[in-house]
Image (cartoon, rainbow, N blue to C red):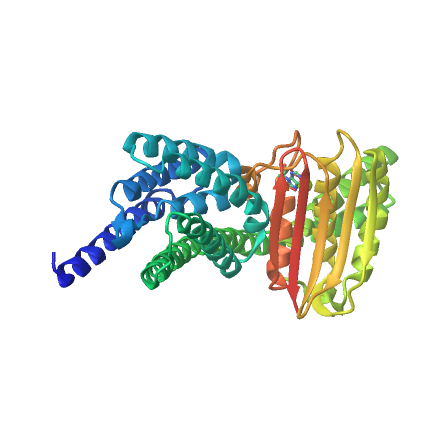
Length: 420
Ligand code: ADP
Ligand code: MG
């Protein structure tokens, strides 16, 4: 083959390998983007295994017996996102297929992949917590590390490291990094899109409820006020008997209860001007801490508050109180089986107030987390499923953001960030 032909062939195989790597990514976008269930996770793992085998079956052959195959790209990505549990099957597939191909270097490959298998997933839990861009850097770092190790081991096969060796090393490294960068950027973009859609759906849901609740609550409130006014007048009348008075008192009491429910419902709607304040949340946190203490004690829960925020924000005091009550209450209820401590931390970031509410209760699965804030979603006996809805709606009113981290059996942390 002449030089041109070889170059052409090289580009062709690189593109082919690129397509193999795109295959699980594209399949995920097309079929599973709506929901990441456990089943889908295993499917993605399976697709990655297929992509890994294809990369090994059609490697990019260079001079000096150099072979670039991109098998470690799906391997590292799955290891970083999924940890040991997810990457273990890939490890088995990689080595089984390597044995199936045969030839020399089987044991080298086994040892090398074992080292990677042991080291890379160690980063996983840290990796998942990072922001998108940092994750891309992590992944590229992991790839550079892997390739460097690979060349280091490979260099023992050569007596002298010629300039050709170095050129090929550089070429391989460059191809790996570029492909890694593109694939990781795509994956991060998919994740960002999923999150945006989830947020959009949630805020649409809230918008309907808040529009409806305001109008309905106002409609009901007026007749309630009028009726209780007349009943009070009637109550003062001298011509009615004392037993009749009791009926009136009962009616008044029930009307009051109805009014209370209606005003609670109003909390879902737009902020009320009478209760707007410009403050740093200190009063509200203290108030809620005080009124929730007895309930916490009843459930063997201790509340610990740390408050270091001086930033101020305009907000509806009633709504914020109600929102905090709901979060405290959920945290306490999550720990009621075994007791525990509810940690509340209000602090200031660069341009935002950060409210952290952490419990070590029962926690939630990732599927349960996606249900949070749906009206009437509740796993509790007698639960209303309106608490979290109210939380999301209040935080939306102050243009804030709610993030949830939760592990089943370990606990839940709500992170609220409110820009000032
Ligand atoms: P309710 O408390 O009436 O069930 P919420 O809207 O307050 O309604 O909460 C909805 C559901 O979210 C709860 O039933 C529970 O399953 C889950 N949840 C909320 N907060 C927590 C938490 N801190 N720990 C575990 N699960 C929680
Ligand atoms: Mg609740």
